[in-house]
Length: 486
Image (cartoon, rainbow, N blue to C red):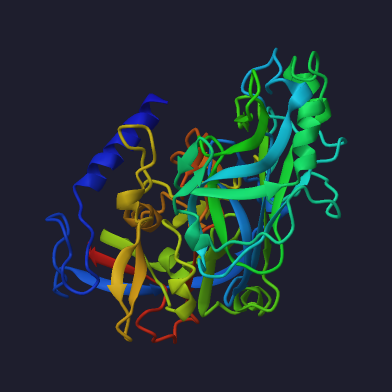
C-alpha cells in the first residue's frame, strides 16, 4: 500500500509539471520539446469507436437523498430522444409525540401545497409542463435505509387518482421567480396544489396516536410519487434538503373570544427519517444515437455520449501496440464535439471520463482507471484536470463554439511501448459516479468510487468518431503521439 501511495504522489507531481498543449505548434511545458522532425516527431494513430448504451446488466447507479433529484419530460431531443424523470419522496412531521394542528375540532382547510426547492432546468425552459402527484400504495416498502437504482421504477401508485388538482401547468423559466404565500416569501420553488381531502386526512388522524412515532405515521401515509405528464422538453433539478421543500397545509380556526378566524400553516418536511428515490427513463427510439448502436461492426463516424443513465463508447487503438520503443513526450487522445443546433438547448456534460476494460479482473468491476495517468491528488480525490476530463473551448469551421477533450495517456502509452503494460480497450463516458479498480497492474488493486459529474441525467454530446485509416477528417477522434527516437 505504501508503494502504491508513493507512485500516486509521484505521478501527481509529474502531472503538475506539465501544461496542456496545443495540437499545432505550442507544446506546453519545458519537459516537452518542440516538434522539429529531426529529434522530436509526432504521429497520429487511428482510434476505432463503437457506441453502446448502458442497461440494467451493467449499470448500478444509485442516488442518495443528498443528491440533486430530477423531475420532468424531455419529449424531443433530436439526437437522444426522450427522458422521463420521476421523483418519490416522504414528507413528515418535523417532530413526533404531539399533534401538529391547532384545535382539530374547529379546523377549516384553506389549501394544501406540495413545494419543491428548485435548482436548475436542463432543456427547454419555454415549453410548459404539468406535474401530477400520486400517493404511494400501502404495499410499498419505502425505506430511508435503502438505495434505489435510478433505472428502475421501484414503486406502485394508482395513476387514476392523482392527489394534485387538475389543470396545473408551468413554464420552467418561471421557477426561479419570487413566490409570495402565507409566511413564505421565497425564490426557486415549484408549487403544486393538492386536493384538500388529503389535508383533511392529516387533520382527522387520531390526535393521540397517529403522530406518536414515525413507524405509526408511515402506516397511514407511504409517500408521494411525482411525474410530469403530457408536454415538456426539459428536466428540472430539485433539492430535497432545501428549506423550500415541504408540504404546506394552510388552515384557519376561530379566534379565541370570537371576532373572526386565525390563519395558520403546518409544514411536513423532508427529514432525516424520509426516504427518496429518483427514476430516470431513457427512450432512444428513432434517434441517430440508437441507430449507431445497431449499424454493424464498422467503426462509428459519430460518437454519442450521455450522462447517467446513458451511453458510452468503446475505443480501440491497435496501432499503439505495434509501435517500436521510443520516448513519448505526450500522448493525447483527442475528441471533438460535432455541433448540432439542439446543443444550445441540451448542453454537454460538465466532464467526460476515460477508463480501461481489464479482462484479467475477476470481480464484478471489470474496468480500471487508466494505469499511471489518472492519479490521486493530495486531498485523496482523483485529479481529473490534468487527466483531461474537463473540456477545452474551441470554434468549429462554422464559427460556432464547441468543446474538445484532450485525455493525457502519456505514461500508459509509454509502458505499452516498453512492454510493461497490456493494451486495453478504452471506454469514454460521462457518468455521475462509478466503481472500478485503481492501481498499477499487476500490483494490488483498490476498488474505489469515483465521482465525475455533479449530477445524474443532464448533459449529452455528439463527438466526431473515426471511420478508419482512410479517414481524413481533421476533427476525427485520434491519438496524437509526440516522441523522440531512441
